[in-house]
Structure formats: C-alpha cells, structure tokens
Image 1 (cartoon, rainbow, N blue to C red):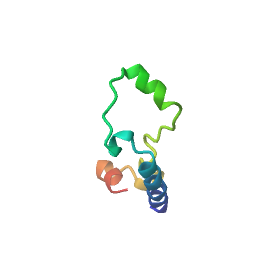
Image 2: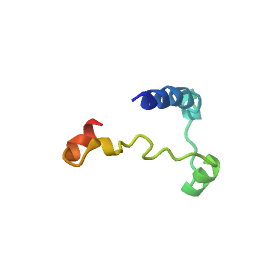
Image 3: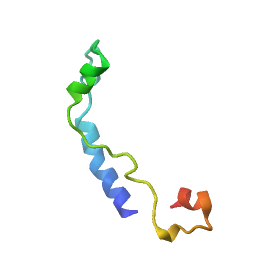
Image 4: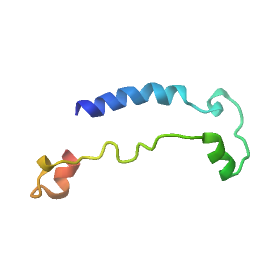
Length: 69
C-alpha cells in the first residue's frame, strides 16, 4: 500500500509539468500518427505497474481477492 502512495506522489508532479501546449490556449497541430510518435520520443511504459499479485491473495478468494488487494 505504501508503494502505491509513493508512486502516486511521484507521478503527480510529472503529470503537472508534462502538460501539452494545448493547455496554454494554443491550437492542436494537424499531424499524422507517425509524426506524433516521433515527437514523443523514448518513454517508460507503466502498464501493469500497480497490478495486485502475490501468494498472500490466495486461490480461495477468486476474483474478489484480487479486486480488494
């Protein structure tokens, strides 16, 4: 639980300081998907970072055990 709070606390400033130029009143650019991907550059995939896992959940709990973990 402490790890989730730490990750959330670290992600907030990142999200605030990486906002797009559209939030400053500028119009969106008309670009292709490939141009957008090229402009994004290298990043980090945080997918499944906060997934619940571990032997402590137990097989008897089923889906509800993972949902409450």
